[in-house]
Length: 267
View (spheres, rainbow, N blue to C red):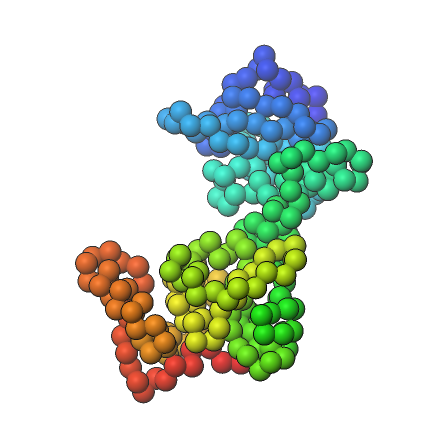
C-alpha cells in the first residue's frame, strides 16, 4: 500500500490513469481513501472523484468491487461520475459509516441519507431497492405492485389506488406532471410523491419513457395507458402530440383505441 500512497503524494501528481483520466489533486480523508480531482483527456473540466487503495481496511470488499482501475495501477480504485455508472454514492456511504463507527464527526457535506437515496437508484444490488411506503395520503398501504425500483402502484386502507414515486426517481418527471402530485409530507428519511389513480397515467407515461429496457418490473398496457391519458388529461395528450408532430420526439404519438380500455396496470 506504500507504493500507492506515494503515487498520490503531491510531488508525483499529475498521475495519468489512462481512460479513467488524470489525477491532478488528491487528499487523504480516512486511511486508504482520497478525495481527488480528475481531468479527462482533451478536457479542461475537473470532476470530483474518490480513489480507494485496494488494500484499504476502511472500505468493505463489497464496495471495492465497484471501483475501476487502470491496468498499470491496479492498486488504485477510482469511483467517479465518468465511470460507467456513478459510484461515488457507495464511497460516500462507506465514509459516513466509517466515521460513525470510529467516533469521527461528520462534515457538513456528509449525508448518509442522501447517499442512500441516490444509491438505491444507481446501485440497488449494493444498497437494496427502494422500500414501499407504508403511509400514503389515503391511509396505510394494503397492497402494492412494483412498477420499477422506486415506483409503486398502491392500494390503501381507504380503498384508494394511486402511484408513489420515490426521491430522486421523481426528478425524471416533468414539472407539469409533478403539479398533479397530492400534498403529503410525513417525516420520513426518504420522501415520496403520490398521485391519485386518475392522475397517475401522466407520470407513468413519462417514467416509462425514461427507463432503460429491463427496468420495468411489471406489465403496462401501452394502449390502455394512452387511452387513460386522452380521457383523464386530454390537454396533456394533445400537447404531447403537437410536440411530436413538430419533430421533437419524446414518446411517440398518443393514440386513442377505445376497445383497449383504460386499465393499464392491474393487480
